[in-house]
Length: 126
Image 1 (cartoon, rainbow, N blue to C red):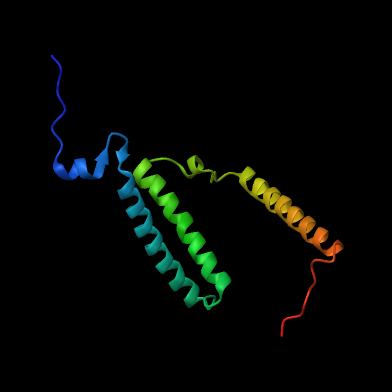
Image 2 (tube, rainbow, N blue to C red):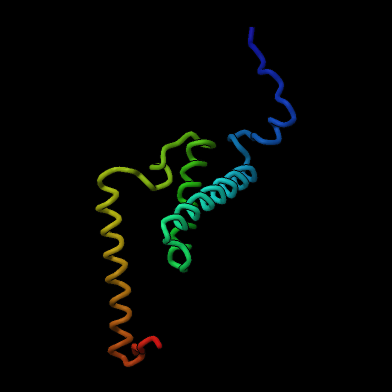
């Protein structure tokens, strides 16, 4: 004799599809987590006297999105951060440093080519 699964409620069918939480609800969850993390991080930055400039705002938004992505991975998918490419292991620091170095060399090469071609010039801020 086979058992049939209990019928699901309308709310459960609205929230969940055959592959877990539906995409629209995942987006809503990410946006809510991101906004919440952004508010907390902005408050912390303001209390530390770091906020106000564009770089600090960008860093807060980036960190909030990263934390929200990790949160959604843990809550909705029940997967570790490494599943999104953010493995928290010693090699991650080395790989990140190598990526920043390669990007810096490429950007520096492009600027050098422009400088040699007399298409770039540096002007002091006033």
